[in-house]
Amino acid sequence: MPICPECESALDFDEEEVEEGDVVVCDECGTEFEIVATDPLELSKVEEDYEDEDEEVEEEDEE
Image: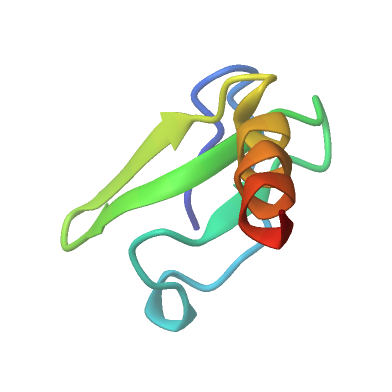
């Protein structure tokens, strides 16, 4: 089972069922991580404004 790089708790997801680009959340500390690679598993902490950037792009597309 994968371990959270922030708080070292077990992350509750199956390594076999995730793909690059998926986002997982640590149940203990709430930190979001993007799956950067699956073999070997590599996580990258999602920055706080990650979702805001996606929303801005969607709003620009609608105009």
